[in-house]
Amino acid sequence: MKRALLVVLVVGALAVSAWSKYKSVRAELVGQREAIDAEWSQVELTLERRAQVALRIAPASGELRQASATLSAAASPHEKIQANTRISELLADVPKTDRANEQRLLDSENRIDVERRRYNEMLEHYNAQIQKFPENVVASLAGFQRDDAYLPTPAGRRP
Image (cartoon, rainbow, N blue to C red; front, side, top):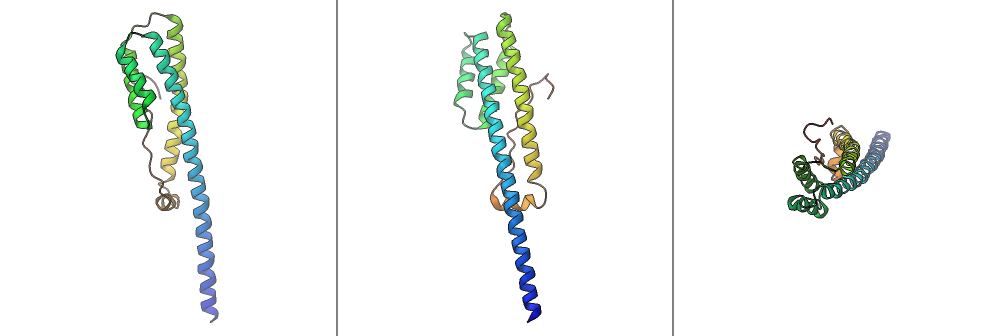
């Protein structure tokens, strides 16, 4: 009888401990996802600003207007990343003749670099976190999945 009570107490203590760990890990992962989403909002803002500057540099470019419209209408990070890549490709071919707009573009690129680095680092940390034990178990049970929406560094630029 005493053994059965002891077993029940031990199993109960383990269950309470496991539930507590689950809740704390889940809360941490939720916090990380919220931070990633907030940082993505900053990335979006900098991408939109750069698209506006790009349109000032080459207002006659229909392709650039289309890429900018695609960026604005994109719903997911992957779509926005694709539209941003297209804008970068088009900007590489545009001659820069206006010093003020060229400086605004450079400033926008620098802001994007900062936000890109923060965002990508947050994604790296989150993706690594959900692969470690016991976080991987909690992530699996709670529906957290790997997020590969990394914002690439343009060719010729340092990460």
